[in-house]
Length: 357
Ligand SMILES: NC(=O)C1=CN([C@@H]2O[C@H](COP(=O)(O)OP(=O)(O)OC[C@H]3O[C@@H](n4cnc5c(N)ncnc54)[C@H](OP(=O)(O)O)[C@@H]3O)[C@@H](O)[C@H]2O)C=CC1
Ligand SMILES: CC(=O)N[C@@H](CCC(=O)OP(=O)(O)O)C(=O)O
Image (cartoon, rainbow, N blue to C red; front, side, top):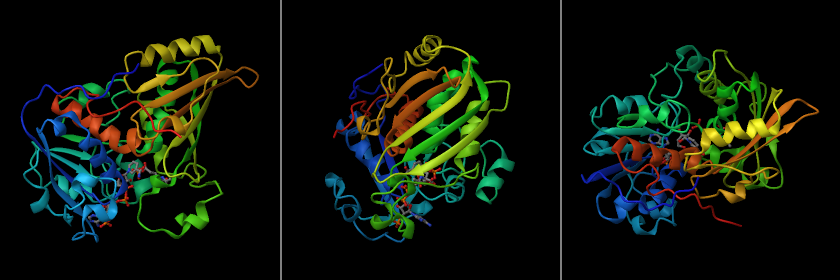
């Protein structure tokens, strides 16, 4: 289903927003979306503190030349004094930085964490994959998963999902919830390089990435494996076994997740399950028979496009999901969650129309 962006909010109170990590990719994309949000355009939502790490003191325009209206804003250090006094604080920081900030901000402040710190409910899984102490669990910012929208409405603490788990969970949740697949799934997902953030890394140099695709985190070791497992296992009595293989591709944005699981149903039955599950979801589009998504169709939008079929010879349901990792996979999910938290229309400021080519 498609709902046009630009619907006006019902909440009339002023909304002052801060962004920690504004020089980063997630912070920049949140700002891009907020600058087109109806609450910003009508003056209710204002952009307060913009903070960074080592780049504090520089201007936003040095990092995000596309955010022209805010280009002259000077980035401040990331500390409580700067972040305090806002209605909404987005955290676009590396993992491990969120808890110290969250505990010092008022319980009334809506904190939306793009990092992983509060996504997992199992402390043991957190410690296994992140090698640090578990900070806790917050409502999970993927309202399309059964039971989550209710928890996000009016929430003051929200954990934005990882980009791969967003694509994989949207692709597989209906089939797992309806019991039309075995509880053992395989996810191979291609990501653009912005998924790795913009901090310099030798293996992300253009000369290393261009013209080559490579798998990494193979064999159940990627930290998104327990997140996908958690999302899918919550939908069924069984623990869903997840094999997840991420692949880095030479493109700046986008995720294409190809997900398979053993099934005995035919495509028509599978299609009924998916069309019913997503009939009222504004951002999830189930494509018709024999149509499969591509990242190029969702770039810059908050849409998730899903194509599916049954490979009858192999006995496999094949579901392919395309998202923009920075939009639906991070910043779009964060703004969608903010809208729910504040009682604004869920789609406000979020487009389903991608940029192509
Ligand atoms: N990129 C993506 O597709 C996705 C990212 N996320 C998550 O969002 C968060 C941000 O990711 P992303 O924007 O890609 O990362 P970037 O590396 O692009 O940006 C990180 C930001 O955090 C700041 N920062 C780094 N270290 C510190 C510190 N010690 N104290 C204060 N600020 C610091 C950086 O400031 P400075 O410029 O000064 O170094 C920068 O503003 C991460 O937790 C990531 O896992 C989640 C889903 C998808
Ligand atoms: C291409 C790439 O490197 N992607 C990142 C995941 C990005 C994401 O969603 O990350 P968080 O869980 O860190 O928020 C990775 O594999 O580590």
